Amino acid sequence: MLGLGLGIAALGCGIGMGLIGMGAMQGMSRQPEAIGRLQTVMLIALAFVELVFLLTMFLAPGTFAGK
Amino acid sequence: MGTSFNPNYLVFAEDTEPSFLGFWLYVILLIVIVFGLLAYAKKGYGARVFTNPFTAASEQLYLFIENMVVGVIGAHGRKYIPFIMTFWLMIFFGNMLALFMPFSPTADLSFNLGMAVISISYVQYEGVRQNGLFGHLSHFAGPKLGAWYLIPITILLFVIEVVSELMKNVSLSLRLFGNIHGGHIAVAQMDKLGGAFLPFGSLVLVMIKLLTVIVQAMIFSILTCVYISLVTHHDESHHEEATHALEPVHVTG
Image 1 (cartoon, each protein chain N blue to C red):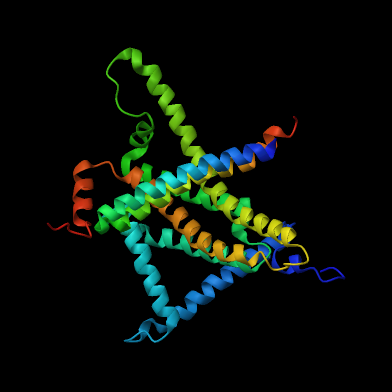
Image 2 (image 1 turned 180 degrees about the vertical axis):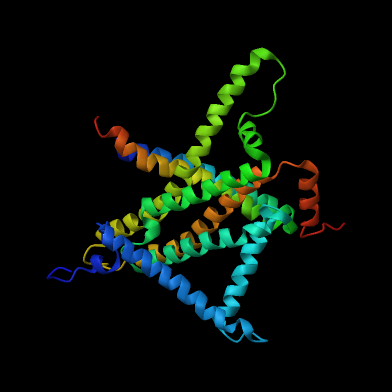
């Protein structure tokens, strides 16, 4: 059960991070002058999406421990 | 070390929790590495041309951090560079240590939580210093709503903002801990998967972890910059002026 939950979390975070990367790359290719600023914002967004998976990884064992 | 040769132990032990004294030995090792490298780099600053490679590298690192801090916070963020630089160096070398050692200070939740508490406390201190205590607290309450029956919403917003401010500690520390410690676990599992046929098969993952080393140091320092800029950017005209003065590129055509 735990593995399935981790898989679902990884799936969602993969899609989310892929969307962020896609958006950033499109922006960079349209406006190469803004690459530095876009990279910064992209890294911040990636960090926030990644945190969801990490929270799942650390909270799920505690939640499912009694079940 | 056991009686038989166990390659997993040399690369990454699965049980990587040292004792309290062991943890402090790793912290001291990290401090010695950071201060030693910087002291060695400092020797070359008197030269007209930087012949010491560590001096040149530290200069480049300073320019990189300065660019990042000024880009995120603005021109008045130059005084926060030493603060951000300390975080960057400690996290970067801690993560590098995690590549070579079975344990590292940044792979421990308490060390990361300590750094996050320092970061967020400093942000609150700066907010109070720049906006006054009442101004800083009213910043939590969101925009001013006109009608009297909307006061419960303001109170609700205040509570939510305070909780999210406290959760910033958790998110900063848990992100770093999860990435570094999770990387250790992944490498240990990869070693198990390879078994006797591929005892060092996890070295592929170590190369990917090299990317994590830099990205995590960047993210911690960028997020600290963002939090600082959130509490110090209130004057709208000042904000406009700062972003305008720091526009690094001019779009032509």
